[in-house]
Structures are given as structure tokens and as C-alpha cells.
Image 1 (tube, one colour):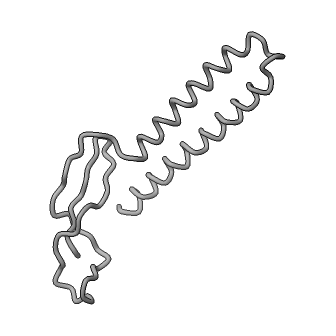
Image 2 (cartoon, helix red, strand yellow; image 1 turned 120 degrees about the vertical axis):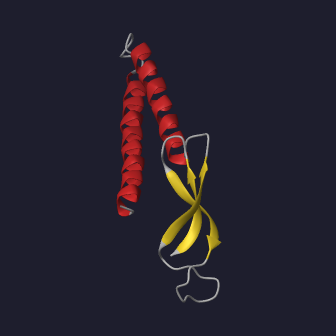
Length: 111
């Protein structure tokens, strides 16, 4: 049970930070055991990397959706652009779901 700092973001996501202290368990030199304990929590005033990526993808989806609405006035002229934007939106939704699942898996593995 080695001690680490923890970084807690405003979105309530967290990550391990700096190593602080070895435990009394016998380990090789310069190695840590598999159990991590929190020595100190640092509160970070912004969102985590995953949340920033998800927000960027949602902004891109909104922009593509606005483009599709604008192009729908002349669907024959903009058919290829509409189809490509629709495909891009589906791909972005898939990436968002993938990121959220990875986060929830990380959280559930530690409980």
C-alpha cells in the first residue's frame, strides 16, 4: 500500500498524481506495490482531459447539425455534404460513448 497524491477535477473525475511514500510491504528497490492509497488530494479548477474531449466533440456535432439544417434548404445541391456530415455525427457520437464507457469502467474497477 504505497502512498500517492490524487488530483480531483471539477467534473469529479480524478487521476493518480505523484508518488509520495513506500509502504512497509517488502518490494524491490524503486518499485511500488499494487495497492495505492491517497496521501493528499489536490483540487484542480478545470475539467479533466476526457471531459474536454467530449465537450469538443459535442461542439463539433452542434456545428455539423447547424450546417445540415442550413443545407437542407437546397438538399439536391448539398446532398454529398449532408451525407458526409451525418456520417461524421454518427462517428462522433460513437467516440463520445467510447470515452464515457472508458471513464465508467475506470471508476467501477476501483470500487
